Amino acid sequence: MLSHTLEKIEKKIKTSPNIPDLNKAEYIALLKTLNDEINELQKNQKEKAESIKGFTKISAHEATRTEINPNLIKISIEGLLSSVKGVEASYPRLTQTVNEICAFLSKIGI
Image 1: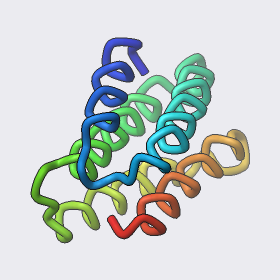
Image 2: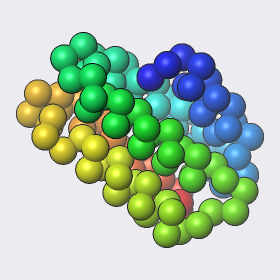
Image 3: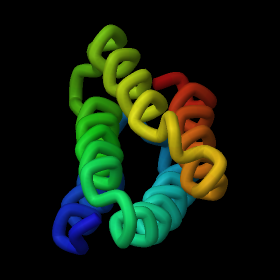
């Protein structure tokens, strides 16, 4: 992910009223891990990496909005999960991290 995009997402997370303060660092750490995995994927599968980046950005946006729309959250998370389909065998850590992000959001009620 581009570093400025990650920085923007990180700022939104830090100021989001939807994410408990105790969980913000965990979410940021997951996104940094995902960023590393996307950068690795981008070396061989640029379009796939771009898709994952886009859905990550959208999911983070929806999770940090002032007023959460459950339908948009669901759609963005489904898109994020779908974007990693087909790379599970070659990039298992990427898939695991996306699953962890989705589980994290569910765990905190988003």
